[in-house]
Length: 148
Image 1: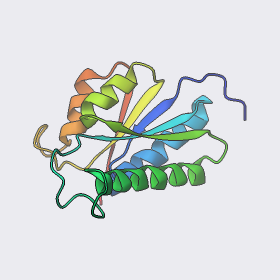
Image 2 (image 1 turned 90 degrees about the horizontal axis):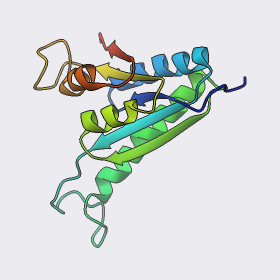
Image 3 (image 1 turned 45 degrees about the horizontal axis):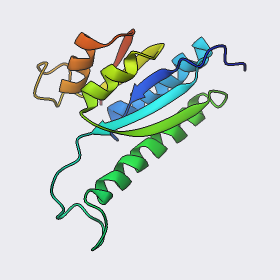
Image 4 (image 1 turned 135 degrees about the horizontal axis):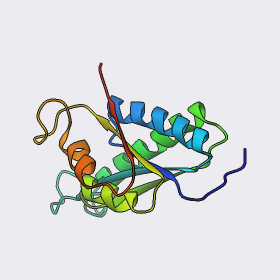
């Protein structure tokens, strides 16, 4: 497969079943569009050390960063199973998930997010991140509803 453009499909992940469903959809979309896939995990790092560090002397939030990197690695692996010819990169971004995905949407072909409806905004149908991205994205958006 030849990738005709480097403008990626972007998928937001958080380690949930809904985000893995979104990864599968995003991988298929990237393959269909001949685009690379960029997996993004973002959150605001806490200001406290305890009990977030995995070991004494480790940087604040190191345990959370390791967890975030595992979420990204799992999503990249899943995308590779669905669309093995699609180049996939992963990134852990420092910042609010909705804000980071909206920012990434400025340079994307498509943004895909999962919705599990557990957020404080958007009622019961959408989570707060998918709701915010829906209203502020700069590219087309696909929201994948997890029905499990």
